[in-house]
Length: 255
Image (cartoon, rainbow, N blue to C red; front, side, top):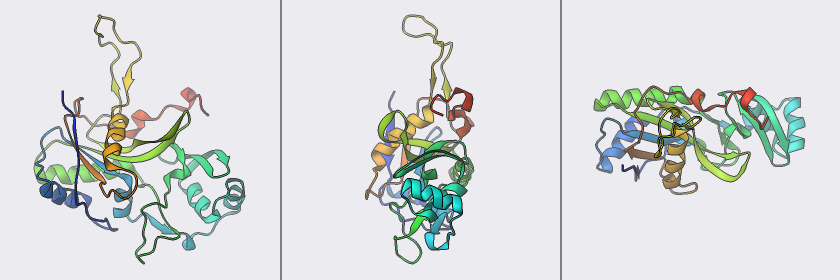
């Protein structure tokens, strides 16, 4: 079994309103890759958010009193905190430099995933511009997948990923925040191991495993490689959803 991850070289800077499917198809052509059934395209959240116009200038944000209070506790800009609150369903932890929330799409992350890095506004400036996560990563992935499949007549998976920290480990890793046409969770319960023992609890976060692998070849700084072509994904493609990966609150021991 061979799993091949190929970052698409020469991908252009993305602007609001750009067709990501169109840009991906152009990049595949430049990189001499023809799509096949079973391939997966992994896209960095930033290019999805940029194409969907999720850029916000902090001067356009008026902080609430709650945002001001949390800004004092977290030592962050109150306007930034206001956006975090708007993107969240619950605030879980506040420390100097950090605010941990449940994003309104269900996953837990720092700052509701709002980011300053590699963000530039339509005025050509980066200061005070921030980028929100896609409104719905599953829908974003689905739109891109539909256009790619219709154009290439192939059966594909599309994964949107972001870099998140974890409560129990240092360092960020790539995780999935939206998917279409591929499994989030693969249930191996009941399958025999090498010695005939039937697995009892094993469920594989396949989308997150692929997200972490793709994040390695994308890089985190100035690499400019926001799309990765994947061939050899070891599980059958199917309709999947981010909700498969989100642990129910009554099973979450960190809340």
